[in-house]
Length: 474
Image (cartoon, rainbow, N blue to C red; front, side, top):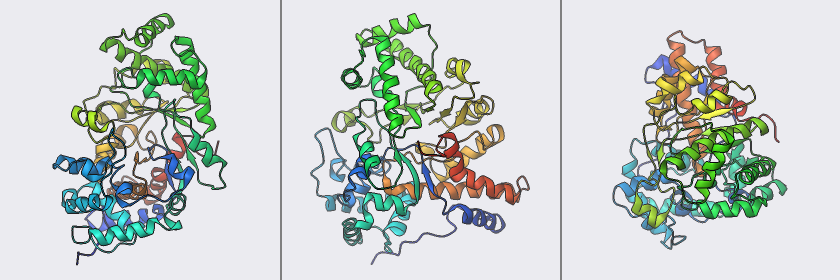
């Protein structure tokens, strides 16, 4: 028999009893607040079709690069885990993939993935045995049986998780059919989209030219001409807003922005779309398009998100075999002060423009991002992201940004996940860490308990609603 699974009520709270008591009290006031998830990558198909999830391996392993990247780092092949490749959906037996996962569960000791996974097993499925090689089949059967019931269909879980809003992310060449189907259904869950135009902005993207052609077909604009290309973006942004979007999302390699005069911007675009642009010009085009997107956000009100600093698809062989988003995106050092100045010079003081900046480079928090967010009215800091959405990363974020930017130049928490069942686990972890941080300030007499309680609720969901303009449905 496997040891019992257990979620300690005081997990992630301070060890000192007095401070822990304050953290407990704060957490008790926010633990059941609704989840606002304004930035993520779950599949809208789940909520439009409301079909049962296929099996435990397809639900837990296939979409979650946090899990399979760790296993891959220890020599476990992605194909053996059922992760889709460029050949299509895996034909690996899902039970075999689950057993392999369970045999390697020790690799996650002490990681945030372990916290999320245990939360899901205990809180969502009521599983009392710890997952390991001995319990793998029994736990697989328990989950598989649950997934066949109405209570574990996507919409029922969405409601059970107390999700007030969930944003997915689509490209300009997505039809948004699943979002339209959700809106037309009698279900009351609020699932919205976000405009992610990287595929038609980044000329280094392998699908750039095909996406540009599709962009023109969808919009009826001549996307090989500068004015037609900009008009296509404006049209699609309107379409996305009709599907509930309140934000755009930009995952560029760097934070570089540019502010070229119209003639120079058009000439640069011509070089890009004719395949004549070199690496420097491709980067300059991405930089110019961030400023163009900011100008459109000022026009239409969509909040702009930038999350640069990732060397995408670092593992060339894995990219060739399995494609994007397979755990091989690696952080790089990122400049923000000089990079964002062209955009902020134009729009940083605009009261109707909202810019949320994320980073994978923690060294930039105290030195660059917090001072900038603590000055520019338009700019807010996104929460700890990717490798830093861990207890230590979240705590470092608060420690490095609060003294300069305060709490109200940040936007609360978002989970940025493809793994649907981990959403409540991630938000619970963020609430616990924030309550632990606030409790320390109370214990040091830097904050009253009343102020800490207000802050805990703001960090849990209110700041996200405000920053992403989510207070009322579109």
